[in-house]
Length: 322
Image (tube, one colour):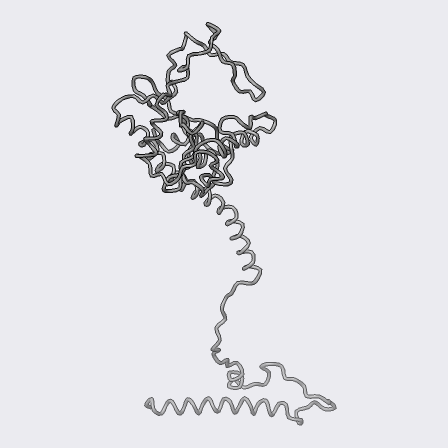
């Protein structure tokens, strides 16, 4: 028998199965099939009295076109989002801190290199020692031991040589006669200066509004102390007395003292008003050290660092800068 004959024969077979199944159900549920005296049609137990063909038809299940797909419940979604939120809350502050630290380190490297080259460059250009430094080794050691009284702010006053009882020599701390020349040369020819505030630097727009002086920071670090509001790098002196030079990139330099720039002590902010405007983060104090033979030889810490910040030498060491 060929394929052409098999297909119609199979269809005929399926139709017969359907007829038998329907006839079987009709016969069983006809009123004549009721039990004697019964008022209801008795349900037939599944499979009882069925022909094999009828049973096969009943068990046939068409293929469904719908596919059951797995999905997350609302509770699972909320739990997952909660976990993501907790992890983010724990890691984002650390990532943010690390990014800020990296940015500040790069800014520090750039500014410090420019700052150092500017000052040392004058000495190199002159071909001689520049007299603007503290002694790296005091030549008066053993000849004059400085002995001082202290005032109410624990600052040294009325200093004298312990050996003689006389005031120490004018160069006891170092040589400063060329500090004014040095700074003028630097800001005139070696740095790109856009603004100079001779005094009242905050009012003149040379300083950020949130900068704080040493007395305010020391008070925060030790509330029980007594700090001079008119002392070195105090809030009042920085904002109203010390001259400030602003550079083209926004960084600025504070010169300790008065308009004459007659001191080997400075402070600088590596990124200007951008922030965080905190000592030991983007603001550092620096003092020059050296000797009569070589002039300025090194830069050291000066002033202070706020909580969590680093002194100049600590920052240099952390970055591997000599």
